[in-house]
Length: 270
Length: 267
Image (cartoon, rainbow over all chains, first blue to last red):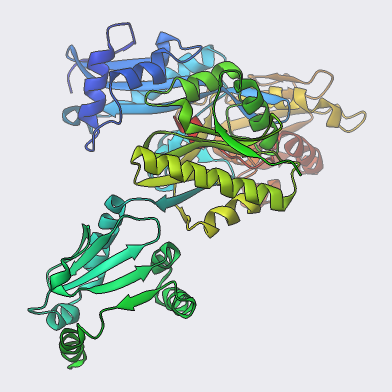
């Protein structure tokens, strides 16, 4: 590795820093210069030394952002915590230990500045694998729970693509050989969509299937989709319940009877 | 009963929202206590954020609850007045969720996510009933920069809990454990009014505690018990007869509130 130097942020670094952030994150750093300015330089109480910029042989190679804020420990007890984020090292400078001296340097600075704790938002897996082993980070007993709900077809398409790998077993592919099954989906509060099922893939498309193709039609309550992730038994129970109450419905079975029979017979064949 | 109404943010609402937040989460640690200045920066000045993203339920000008939809469908804050009855809270959470979902759809967000305390059954049940699913998330990890200052602040804060006439002195010898940065390998604790905690070995102490900074972190943040630490040999008390005194000290420095950090704090 070349000659490494660290220095605190100074106005004018924004372009270089955001370039490092974008270059370091494969999926692209979320935000642009205005997001960076808000998050760091415009935060009440911001100090330039809360951002460390790393140079290797005179080129900006990494950046390490912190923010010192109060954290509540109990009623009437708040202490300063340095919340870290936006740690980035350009790919060509990785594997050479830049974060370790940057972390050590900031620890000395934080101690001198009266900071008591430091932390950041991360996954259990990354903390166990890296932060705990390298620096002693732990998770205080937390009750934070992350709840998500899909509202649009984009994430649903991704879930269907993930399911394809699980559902299209060799046996299923054999059963679907030469077939193209179209299924119109009506999911509560979602725009219309249809599934296209072949031996190669299961794809979710926006809009209804062409009526001329005589598609199967499914009306699906959103919680039934959610239950898919709980395994076959839970999904089966949910399917039965929603079927009995009429919230889950299938239409077009008769028009597709021939195709479905062929698929079933090929699937059942040893 | 007077009807509630849902509306979007208006200038001047900040103080009521901040007050509601701090009251609603008084039973938790691990978050940035809200002030009007911090809230304006964290919520209103966030790029891409609109006042239409802050949805407030009120009754006769009294704020009963609110939710803030942030970028990418993440709900930055959700708070409901704690003294309300369970059915009222449940109804309000449902109404705020519905409004936030509507706002998310109008903005074109394809998913919506909440970070809520799992110990609040009203909020969790309301979300599950609306088809939400709990997923693994990112949480706030933490390490101690200055154990001397932390112990001092906790003991000063809790000095009214000291047993009457209790004035022992302790000498903590700390190996680094998993820490790379451990500025105080020796700490002196003298219980008194005020308690004195210093980052150096005392001239003499009634009791010596030999452990490492990782184990001390686990004890302070209530991840292990003193019995567990001594049983595994990770913490040794000298003389052994001082175990009860050390137990009293550790009970006094252990932080027992569960941590809850909303999406707003993850920025």
